Image (cartoon, rainbow, N blue to C red; front, side, top):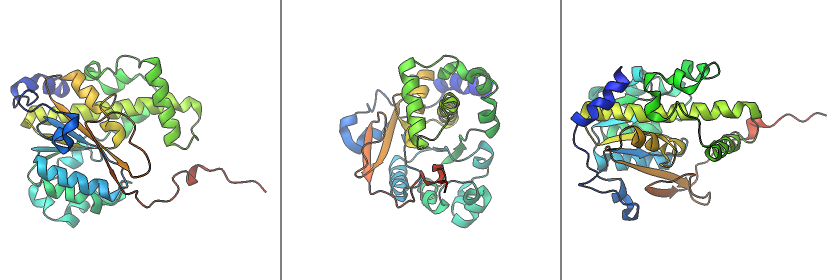
Length: 276
C-alpha cells in the first residue's frame, strides 16, 4: 500500500524540474543539477569516489539521501544531531560490521547534507532468498508492475546481464546461478527506484541516491525503473570509473574517473586450490 501510495503522491510533491532545468549530458557537472532525483554511482571501495559524492551532495543540497547500504530501519535512526558525531553515527548504524567499506569513506556524504532525511534501500535478505522459491513480482510485492518485475527481460539484455554477473564473480559462478543473480540485481534496482520515489513523494526534490555504478546506470538500472514508474520525475546519473580501467558499464549523464583504489586481487578467493 505504501509503495503504491508513494507513486500517487508524486503529483502532489514539488513540481518536476525537468522543463525548468533540462539535463544535458554535454554540460559536465551541470548535467546533474536541477534533476529531481540524482543517482551518484561508485565503485564501493574507492575512497575518491566517495569524496566526489560528498562534494556533489554539498553542491546539490538534497532534501533526502537514499543509501543502498542502509535498511529502512537503520535509516530511521539517523538524525542531524547524530550526523554531527561520526563515531556515534557509525556505532548506531553498526556500519563497520555490515561488510561495506569503512565508514570513514561514507561519513563525509552524510555530513555534506546533515539536515537531509536519510532513507534506506537495502534489499532485505529474506527477499533475496525468496527469489529461489518464486518469481520477481511475487517477491517484490503489489507494486512490482511499476518497475517491470512482472515481465521477463529481453533475451539480449538478459544474456548481457548474465555475462556481467559472471565477469563480476571472476567467471566462477555455476551457470544455473546466473538467472537468480540477475533477478537479485533487478530487485535491488527496483528497491532503489521505489525508495527514491517515496522520498520524493514525501519531501519533493532534489533526492540523491548513493549506490554502485551497476545500479546507477540509466539504460537498465534504477534510473530506468524510476522513469518507467514515474516519467514526470526528472533523473540524472553519475558513473565513476578508475583511470586506465575503462568507463563503467552502461549509460550515464556524466562519467568521471579517479585513480584506482589499492585492493587485493578480487578473484583470489574464487581460485581453486591446486592439488599436489
